[in-house]
Structures are given as structure tokens and as C-alpha cells.
Length: 355
Image (cartoon, rainbow, N blue to C red; front, top):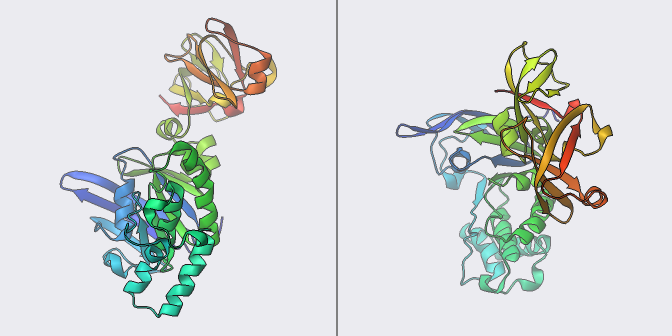
């Protein structure tokens, strides 16, 4: 945390398209040199917010202040902001260095200055040997780095990225998540990234804002959002969560089959309908893993290399629970559909939400 003034302040920002309210009173502060992700399902308002920051949409209400200056109505070309599109939009007839130099040439900067900046960027993205290649001679990851360098050539104060890894295959996406985070650190520029990929946001971000139906649900660091989701939507949207409906009875949560579940969090009043929630990796077959116990039957297994996922049917929940065991634990205790199991977890790992 820092007491420094935020680089970007978004206050009560709204956007209406006719009767539809795409963004509804969003307030956020984004810091200098921060990797910030806007996360949410389709229609949550994240792309609308990004386009408003870029200047492609005017707010229906609220303000956008960058370094103390209100840019809410400033045209896109006059903002120290750049937007990198998912498609990369590289010029196919230009070389790598030509693509990077394009924006600088449009500003009619001196040739030596352009050359020095392009060389600097080529070194940072580690593509100097490919400077004279055309985009169709590059891999997906190389194209992504060229697009990033072009977006950063004019040294924007803020770089906006719309699904920057969406065009890459799964393996390359994983590699580029860490690469993009490293490049953001090396360039020392604030990145605001739109994504619908929860894992991507958790891996790359310093902080994440979750949006739903145009409203801000939660804004926090990846660990805080994963371990302490603000509501049931955030809990369900980030990662996998098991939900166990019940009611508060005698200082615990009584589930549908009568099982009592403990939680460290303060309980609502006696008789309140609640949903207890627990992450798959917090469930264990080890009797010493915690005071909470739940009997069930293995319905299916799925081997993922690093771990084994179980689907466990229990009368305490309307849907099967997901359990994640490490490969070592799974090897010690082979399980098949139909096997009875008892799941254990600590009260500290129980999250509670209103029913």
C-alpha cells in the first residue's frame, strides 16, 4: 500500500446506451506503475470502461482524472494513453521496426531519435534479430511483443490492453502471462488490462477489479480476492468454489443433511439462511486437516498431472463437490467412482454468504 496520490482516479463513472446502463457509478483509484486488471463476464462493463479511459466513449456521468487533470472529455489523440487491441493490428506490409516506429514518425520526430527509441524497444522485447521481418514471419508471441512495443513507443503514462493474450494458444498464453508482467515492470508504465480469464488476472495483476452488470463488486489484490471474496458472485467467478446451503443453528451452519459446519467468521443471527463455501484445495481426506467433516461418495475422477480432481456427491449439497488432491496424495490413496470418502477442512477456510 502507498499514500502517494493515485495516477488515475475514476469517480462515479457511468455510461448509458439508450435505456441500457453499461456502467453504473464505478469509482476506482489506480496507482503509478501498477498492473491492474478489469475482470468480469461478458456484459459486465469492463470493455466499456476501457474505451472510456481511451477516449472512444464519453461518460454519461462521473469523471476520469489522470495526474490531477480531468480527461473525461479530452479527445483520444490528446490523452497520454494508448490502447493495444486484442488483434494487435500490426501493419502487414511493414517490418517489425517499421511497425514500432510508425507512431513516432507520425509525430515527425528526428530520425536519430526515432532510431534510438526503436532500438531500445527492440532490445527490451528481445526481438532485435528479427527487426526486418514482416508480421507474417512471426509467431503469435512475437507479434504480441511487437504490438506492445509499438503501443509503448510514445511513452504513454497509461497503457490499456484489451484481452492482450486472447489470440494465443493455451501454452503460449501461460508463458506470455509472466512475460507481460515482466515487460510491464521493465517499462515502468501502468497497465490496465481487460480480461475474462480469472487465472490470467490472478497471475499477472497487482490488483483486480471485478465488475458485474456495470457495477464494481470488489477491488483488491489477487490473494485477497481469492481467499476473501466480497460476495457469492465473486467467490463463484474467481476459481472454483463449493457451495453448501444451510442455516445458522447453535453457533454453526446446519447443512441439509444435518451436518454442522464451523466457520471462524462471525455468524448471522440464529435461524438465518446462509451458504457455506470452501475451495476444492482446502478439502482433504486427512482426518487431521480440520474440525469440519462431510461424508460423501466419489462420483468421478479427473487426472490433471499435478493434481487429481474428484467429484464427490454428498446429501449435504445439491451439486457434487469438487475436491483437488495433490498427485502424491492421490497416489497414496487410489480412488474410483463409488468409493466412500470423508472430507475434512478447517473452520478458517469456510466462507459464509447470505443465501
